[in-house]
Image (cartoon, rainbow, N blue to C red):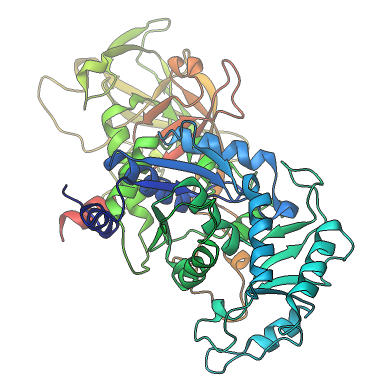
Length: 560
């Protein structure tokens, strides 16, 4: 079987060597926040790898920290995975499914002299742990008798000991070069109600302890995770080796394989920072279209196929790197260019009055819905005496090489007529209220018998038929290209762009009043837009700009 990345190369080797007879992966999210685009990459890798090898992929929630978890996050994670196009079938699990087993194994470790109850506080734990260049030193309780640790551990479970007064540590090696192997914590006291187990437990296993047990119980063959877990792999294997003698466990070890996580320009991926954005009202919630969450991207108009294409294009790497966000924009733009219906919307309207147009007269034009895909058919637009054009498409005193409308200039209205500006009408504040123009009757359809050329083509909306719509324009939430390179003395929040959202009350062609949530359009000359699924109402759609028309990544990639 041909493979296309190093993870699949490892799997091919394992299958050919008979190390495993099948492929079984898992996606293990923590239900303490909403998934983001980095998780989308992991979802695609784990589920996609299983699909390629006709294997299985579990969805297993790492619910080992009840203080930060909520069923809201569980539901959102399941929705996101399904929306991306993947199905875990009957393979939905939770770390809490194995709490009894984790506890049983912990007691076995204590009795085998492989774990002990420790009473060091937070600062003391750090002090005793040592540094990267110096070994740690033994806890004063490292040598306590196994039976004494067992009794204390049982008191931890029964709630007789308070939070922070004791925790269970694996007994490995305080001089190990790998800091993760210096007697790591495997159980701590948390007197919090769990969203699944209620108040049954007041002690909870640490991720590094519960995760390998979950993998082994479920028959996972390849535990695929991001690069920061590479240093945790020895502990993963230690846990499995120490409990492997149990008759309840399979007779093989899962293989942990690490890949580089996604780092995206102008984007923060930390759940903690994303939560801070939400809680401090920098954004409108986890699904704010400026957020890199899957729910935010969905609301903004991204499609599952565009995110899968993005994951495929960035590939699977062994070392960290920064991906240009322009590639993400390229992937959705390529798809929408082929599929999105075109529409005319004037974001910031100014009225044009055609002074030589007969009062009451209406004209009609048939326009292709998508020139890139004629099979999408056409629609009819009416044209009359009064029109809307973009305010920025007119300048009273234009610079050189300005090819839009100005006094005395002629432009083409898309698929309609040529018009010439003759007069500016201003209101009492000196602002432009109307532009009085004349049209060329011989230019119907946007051409003239004499084939004269004009360099400016403007979109427009007939005032009489126009509908009111709200349009939201988004920019990158952060102004710093590399969020990891924050100058000393600064924080992430110093680089939140307070102008990343602009709201326009706009004029649109009539068909857009019927648009439904998640309908996608290309607004001519403005970009690609999606109907907001949260704030829209019948006959009152709100449009989010998914991405602009400019394709810098495509141009760059074609030159390299």
